[in-house]
Length: 352
Image 1 (cartoon, one colour):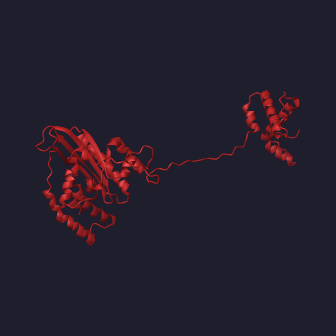
Image 2 (tube, helix red, strand yellow):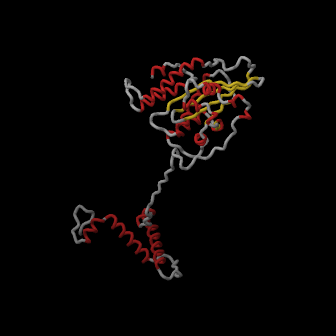
Image 3 (cartoon, one colour):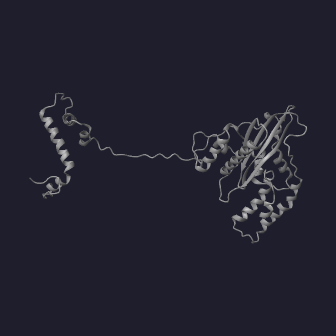
């Protein structure tokens, strides 16, 4: 099975939807851990045989190597339209050239296609559609380098409103998987280039789901693109309003706020001491603070003492400061004295 699938040489991905079906069968067998020499279930065998029987139909597929039809005159407008889509089976993209000559003749043809299977590890549909959008950007990057034509306009199409919301987002932050791919899309394109198209008119829907080699209608749609591309731009799908990203979207990175709570212990004597570098200023400031505390504790708030500091207040401030400094620097000694124990010789103070 692998040998037959790999034998189809298709570097431009022009037959990508037709080979995706066979690749999906092989992936399904690998997911169920079938060995190389094991017989496959009958249901998979029948599906494989249907694909094999229709495979010769690809011999009838004809693709012109020249993008410009023979009856065209001088070209006046060249556009590149890139479609993308994703499904449970896979994701893919396809690029079409839309050319118009001086006589207003218009033609559209497939230039490049790509189909990839969805990963074995299950992924959400929006993620697969986003992967399809990334593939469409890569196709555009390749054509920008290799295509020997001056493209006047580039348009990207998707049938996913969620992806359009992601691309047009300017305020929300995404998780790593989505964020990296949206950044790449923004590097390669601008949000104004992306437009919505319904699934029935999206040829990339074929690239993401696959088709049988004998499905002539789908193959024609795949090779020529949607009908509206061959018509005037006034007939193209109208612009739709893009809804904001839902708050409960699983791809949104939540903003985490961390609040810390601190306990205010108030102003201490140590804070006041460290604030002043002069002893006299410290004494006067501490004395004024003590007078203010006395006023706050008094019952009669009308009696305000605005006189100069008295000697007793200065002496009381000195006493409180010295007592605080002793308490901080001689903690162990004070504990020993209060318990009636002797002060050890190695301590900073001892009995006279």
